[in-house]
Image 1 (cartoon, rainbow, N blue to C red):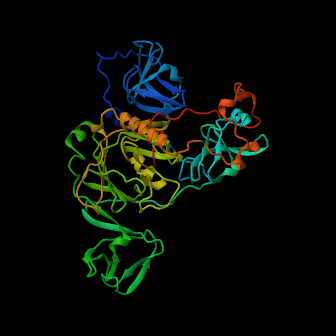
Image 2: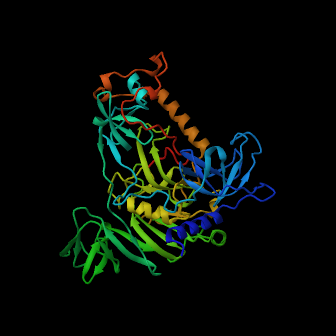
Length: 514
């Protein structure tokens, strides 16, 4: 009998194969080869839809990920693969042979981003304690006194290790940067909150979670003046049995025999009887076999995952507070195992959050993703994205098709008609609104916004000079890079501690707001 993990891997590969139709025999000639497996050798090895550049990237896989080979294709020119052959791989796409080597072993089964036992998040995190903490690209920059940038209070970093260098304590981030340990505090694993799996085919008001931090009162009648008979802890799940309008115009829900809760004190889950128009059509069902869709209710701050007309999962989220989450129907344009989210060029207030896990991009920079830095689920908190607690983010990421195999760091569907749709609405405002266009950010629009911001700053007293706190700068002095006359020394000649060479950052979803 085939082990269950191998069976799941085979199923995942079959599903992925159906998502991305390959080229015709007239378009690409795939030759047979004795090579059965290859292993990615680049930190972000690219899988393209066709064996040439330029052509759309369909996925990225991490260094060491093994892939199944289905043939080989000769380069048609010197672009992209420098005249060397391409591997045609399963489940789809082509990998330049410069980015991989032959392997005797096939792929390992598993999720795209597995967790160590007892962990809720994939990385160790630290938070910047104050404004002006310097970040250095490497040891040579520390020696030269040339930081890359100042960090601001609240930014979060992925910590690869702590170390001592030149008499000072440092943390080293996953991409090799160095930050003074005195300028950070270590974080935990994020919220323990998790939603619930659902069964059955019920539609309508279903249940709710209580949302008052100091206790939600339960009254004997649907009125604020009624006797308080109970007090429920934050996030207690209660049934929605009957709605009543009190004389004060406040709505109450009956949650038991003579037990009523003010609707304003609840995050309500209402199950849809059927997918809304344009969310799930026959074409996607026929061509992908996937009837998933995701409903996000901004008014109630809840998310429900569906298979057709059947709800399968529900949880609380945190949508945009500083920037509203856009309403509308949005096909998922990318899935990314983890990424860095940061302020855009047109934003004046800098922020950066590294190692954001389980990212599902549905509109421009907006995504469903894990948020390890807060526990405010059920209330707006984000920069425009839909924040999920770590348990929920992982569940939704792995549940939303296609499930990515171990080592796959990103996937971009070539045809958005095949993608799962995220339906974002606001039940407190009523009606359906399509606030934004579908798909990734518009590059020209982004460029225009950045240029407009530059012009605005030039006309104002905006000071873009980096400001550093001398308390965290070795020697208390920051050197202007333009004043460094000689080349920086080779980083390989200077370290006295363990090294971590910088990695290139994923090309999917980098620099997104959270």
